[in-house]
Amino acid sequence: MLLNIQDLGIEYSTIYGRLEALNGVSLRLEEQECVALVGESGSGKSTLGQSIVRLLPPNATYSRGSILLDGKDVTKMSSREVVSIRGSDVFMIFQDPLNSLNPVKRINVQLLDALRTKYKREGRAFDKDEAYKEAIHELEEVRLPDAEVIIERYPHQLSGGQIQRVVIAMGLLLHPRPLIADEPTSALDVTIQAQVLKLMNDLKAERHMSILFITHDMSVAYAIGDRFLVMYAGEVSELGPASAVVGMPLHPYTRALVDSVPKVSRRHGELTTVPGSPPNMLDPPSGCRFHPRCPRAMPKCRAESPKTTIAQGRSLRCWLYD
Image (cartoon, rainbow, N blue to C red; front, side):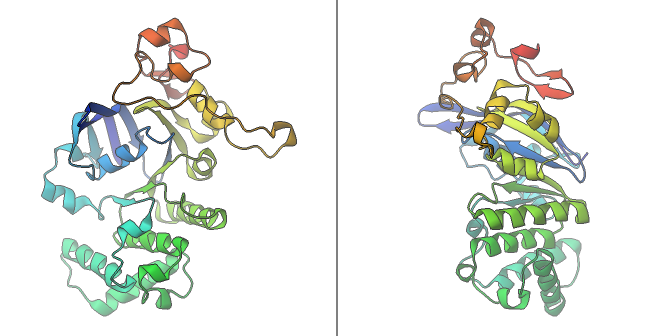
């Protein structure tokens, strides 16, 4: 198994008190699989992604659980060990790709720097001409036309879609096994978004890549995910095959997310929203964290936090399926 997260807890220390960002999150990512991590803003999606590559802010702590990457626990690695796995073992793409590139360096300099690091880790001598050809090849692999022109430009001279493809190419140069993509298409227009999603699907098939794709958009998640992991307030609400979760959502929160996707039919012209707002994580609700917004809440939901259970081949955190 490539990635195995078990009972993970993440806490933030703030001036207002302790904030529990993740509470008992578990996930397995297999070879050549894409898990789409879905939820509203503040649900803990980005925290989970950053915890895998140890890029959490200084006020964050791993309160419990483990993150096994190829059998090694990331939470117990030294700083030097973590630096050695970034890029080579795991690579993360962020929502704003400009944050991953140096604005005052040409694309070729940054791609060659990545290759220089890769060669050093592999104990190979760095050959600039060979590395340049490899960088051009990867830019062509991510469907960038005129790769020889683009590689000589600065980031500000490229469009958002081009920059995102350059960052993906940088990741591919390092041959990471799991690729973590944190809302990589949210800043792109719909046409470019579709192209990037197709590219990532192609790469998964051609290179046997494993992807953890973080998004708040259910339709985007369905376009790329083999499985869905639905998060709410730092907890896993539902985990199962994408077609089953979308076709027949079991958790009330998943149902609300699916219903909120705009419909094409005139009969379903009215937009549906999830009522209420996400909870204050400094003082989350007692019992089930979704119960203040849940149309099927019972007295037990307000009093006790549900445990993870298995129903219809899916992992659920809901008293309706206890």
